[in-house]
Length: 115
Image 1 (cartoon, rainbow, N blue to C red):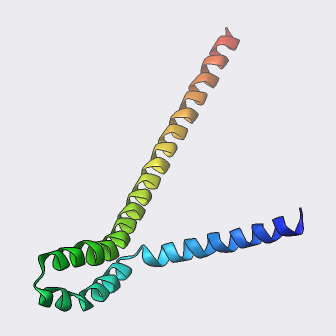
Image 2 (cartoon, rainbow, N blue to C red):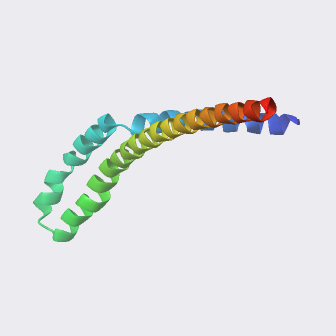
């Protein structure tokens, strides 16, 4: 591996770890609460403007974008955990059925051999 490729690999590994860390922090309800409070700081100014466009823009561009992202990430994480749990349960059932089928086949082979 060349020196440049090695540097690029280390940089990518660092960026991957940083991305995972940021995602794990931003994808929490605590982040949603913090972002809500941050967004609410500018609400009085938006309301004071009396301009409908400014108020709608505040809601769409400030509040929704800041708050919905972490909430969506939390929801996706919960769904992923449920899916993983269901997949593990399905795997266990399939493995138990497979073992039972193997036992039945062994018994059938014994009966056929014993004739």
